[in-house]
Amino acid sequence: MTAQTYTPAQKALHWALFALVVLLYGLTFGQDIFQRGDPNRDLIWKLHISFGLVLAALIAWRVVLRLVRGVPEHPAGMSTLERNAAALAHALLYALLVTIPVLGILLTWFRADALSLFGLFTIPSPVAPDRAVARTLRELHSFCANAILIVAGLHALAALWHHFIRSDAVLARMLPARRRSRTA
Image (tube, rainbow, N blue to C red):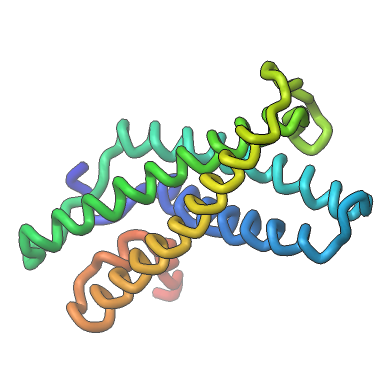
């Protein structure tokens, strides 16, 4: 891609994924407010699963768009070290974005729960329940969820550094396009 900015679809997916990750993290803590067996806890768990499936679908779309559309060129002033750090950060973000839903799906199934998208359809577990495997998957899922917050936080700090310190267009190319005034 030789464009100076991401496509509107890439930008929308970027910010939608950010919002979903924050929402899913919030639902995780919201679930802990209620005691086991409380219907509200089960509702939050089902919402977490549903929004996690939405996240998985949007990640797949984002990956396809990245493969088809590519990414804008780095600013000319970026060093090789900065370019490599950016590539590593993006690779980590994508790896975590793919891994977290996969672990979540496996965790759901090894807990003997079905996957359901807001009650619209249900995919029963194809595996036998296994508490030990479920516990390990839960730990890995939680670890990766915490890791994505750290990596995304560093990603945001780097974008802000580029914007305010370097004064380049790294952040601007992911922000919505400004509308031009129609006054003549």
